[in-house]
Length: 310
Image 1 (cartoon, rainbow, N blue to C red):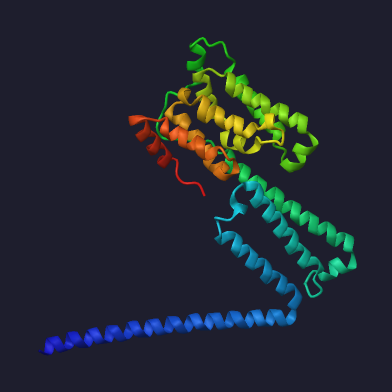
Image 2 (cartoon, one colour; image 1 turned 120 degrees about the vertical axis):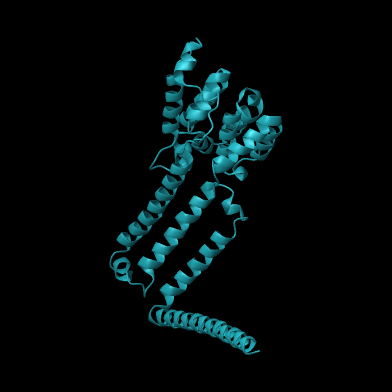
């Protein structure tokens, strides 16, 4: 009985400790929230206009980050515009709000303040584009070898008579001409519309005219995600180049693609974001339905092996 009493006593003391820990955690949490509230009140007392703008921007940012189903996430162009506008609004509050720490700069020279706002927006625009370009440019390296990822020596021995290196080089050069680092794609397409359309057509022609083994090699060794993203659907009906390229690889030439190449096409569509093209979901469906039996299992395994993309 004494042993049982000791066990009950130990259990009771442990329960009391847990209650004390929870109470202490609640007190710390309440203290932190109260301190944060005091800090906000102090900031609002010092600079009400500036911090009202900052709180509004933070609220907008939270809506953007936690509402992934919104249309602004349908394409990277929309997200890039959001970050650009966000940077412009933040820098405007920073340089022109009367009680901002940097308000004297905007008040002393409005031209300098306006230039700083434009520079901040442009810097955010370029930074976001470069980060996205880096993600799109990553080649998919899968652990399993595939016959579609043939070496150059093997292709040359087949006697196809096709300059494989030149084709891949031409794709990269055309992509470089389309993808201007410091000029937004919208402006570049507007100013150099004829030039951009011609370069996009050249890329599509290379994929369209390639033999099956060459086609698989080009898919496996080109930056297909970046190509899908940079080639656009223009206003003219006959210049729907993004749709044309996606349908070429996922519908018309799907029978020529190896499992490895199909995985890369699926990955390229994924990182481009499916809502960015109205035919993308249909093309994904066709790739999956066109893959049968063991190839379908291998397709799933390779898709899992490449990891996730967010």
